[in-house]
Image 1 (cartoon, rainbow, N blue to C red):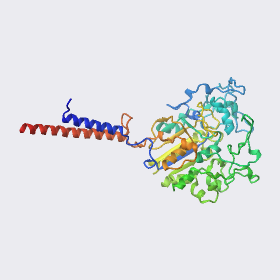
Image 2: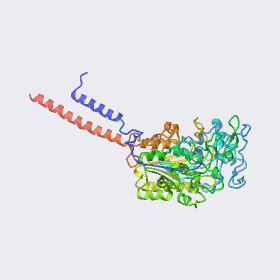
Image 3: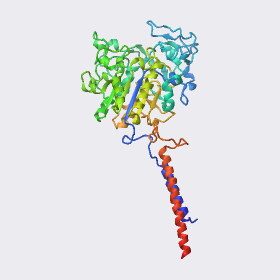
Image 4: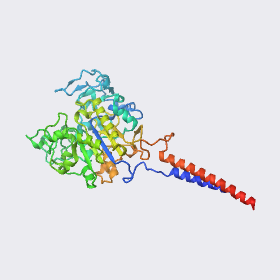
Length: 505
């Protein structure tokens, strides 16, 4: 079939528009040079499993999917008839928490039915060897048996009452994000900044754990038999508590590379901001200041008196000032003081959530918001059960799922990200953005959070009514249609002119 000139022109235009539609104008994963994110802010909270707060979040893998892993078993491997009594570990010695029924069913239960969300519960054991026993090879049935807080480990909150839940609804919630290392805050703070486990060579015997021939725990300790520090031990370098009587109980300075070192090598500014830091280094720490929540203080390169410490380790007040005057560095870590970090036992969940929501509001009101990515996550699960077994990893982890919210003008809105992440994904995200060398195998292999972003459509860009194409694609389509119309109109006019000329000859 012979095509007319008009038909040939129309076919070319159609192919042009189709090609424009098929060529991505913005990659989902931006290259380091192309990324619009120039401020990465990590807010590091404490001790909550995903199901404990977000178990009923719309579209997330939550409590409705919990099956066999929700049933807890005793020492003989038999299912409990009812959960062990909830213990109030804030008392010494711990006592039964009479706010809870004595016969809670052997299943997840709502804590806030008995203790309001603005009141404090007891703390729960969250240590390296104990968490592995609770996971029990992926069965997730050893939490109540191992926990010193009894049945509290199976509790959850109606998270929709919390400010961050509402923020998560407007941005991105990751429901497949695991804390990097088994156990507690100490080790997971290390994995956040160096993807590594610290060493203590020739540690005192009193600190060293003992295992039997099958690798089962006989005596707990801060240090593994082969010299790795896995449970809470404060730094030999200040600040630390009053340990002048026996400095061997403190962790010697570490020398492994950190994400701070990687950034400094590329002349990229960064800071770790901590609530109560100035008071702590002045020798008058707040009662809620945790020394083991300050990971960079463990490293030789950030010792007291060093220029690196002065430049990069700062107070929460400095963080707020930098937000206000627009001087926040490209990479920031923010650690709230204990009473504001959501930790069971000494932190009010609602108050802490409100504090972080206020911080987010300050970020959004600042000049850095337009090119920022805020990652709100938790160091570990705090001994609280989650129904999803962690994937098989290495000797150190990963541990359990923790809530993670990504807030940014470029974060996908109302999105639940099911991509597998762990804490080292934050490192990978920073490394990818600034073209940094990985710190270890885990962050080198990690997914880098980019699935949570749409770099083609910042917050203030109109969204196509279909909700499928980005604004830029809509403009390409529109331009193509206009172009097609103009060319087609010209072609019609040209054909008519030629026909007219042929007639006039």
